[in-house]
Figure 1 (tube, protein in one colour):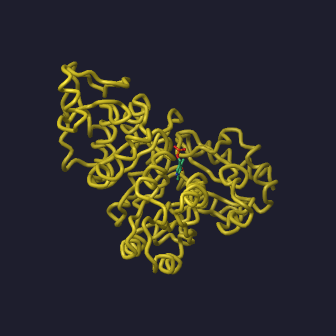
Figure 2 (cartoon, protein in one colour):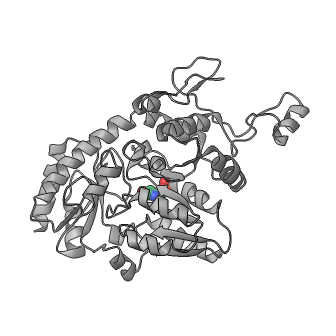
Figure 3 (cartoon, protein in one colour):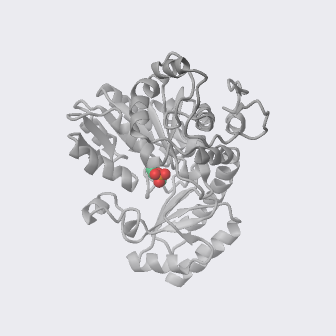
Length: 398
Ligand SMILES: *Cc1c(COP(=O)(O)O)cnc(C)c1O
């Protein structure tokens, strides 16, 4: 088997289609699916050498698999990272990326606006193991400064955040994190690898749920961790191999095929999003729009500085609270009610009663997540059909 691509110098659209492919002796066009758990050895000595680390080869698919390797090389090339490992889910990627670096007595500083399960890891699970956690309002640099005036081991953030599309100044927080002795971990799901490069802004580690835009067609769960070769080899892999976070080869193969259309899909979803956001911004039937690509977003200048475009997620608020939000969702006829996101199908949800229902009222208030908010993930349908559906659902509320 040989790696047929030398990725250096190629542009992202080319890398998303080509990087990492290893053709077998059968010269297949598309990436092969190696759906195997184990590998065989030609001699007892070869097995012993492989386990001693003297021979570089696959030994067991919990450690590595050629289909996973192709996806890992492709994602690393796209991100501009030295190394990548893929995991069974986005949460297994994030949990492994944090847990592999932490021990009792350590301290993590995180933005308050996190994906629900990330919030639970940082505020409930890690503290049980003696890791201290400080939360800050991610848009407020003074809060980061105060929290990072004492030493920390990890800084963890999401930008734009779920569900209200809050931004964090990644470059500024990277500087503060490093001065406090911490590694910066960025969950880059909402921005996707094509619109924001946290590593180039100073982050040390980037994580993805490949379930979202990277597959983007509702077919698989997966995650990815990207960083320096030293971090992946020396810190991440010893944890990952023993704890079993590996992605299924079948899912890796699905994600490889999905990456071939990532730019086409996300660019088209983003064009639709600009159109919908512009219509919503002028609509008196909503009380607040949150889209980083619209000038009404309080951090629009920062969005333009650290993102090359603004992706497919937005949130908007209806004045009538939960009742109005439910009436809106129940009136949709094309857009589905779903808590998934980044999909080619447009999906809407009510975060306060679904993705963020495990937060207390005080915690939701701290995020300014009122009961009137709808989160919308814009898909690939015709923009006029999408607007017609939103328009009629808004009318049926008011
Ligand atoms: C979905 C999501 C995750 C978790 O990914 P799974 O694949 O569902 O485990 C983490 N962070 C963000 C921002 C997400 O949207």
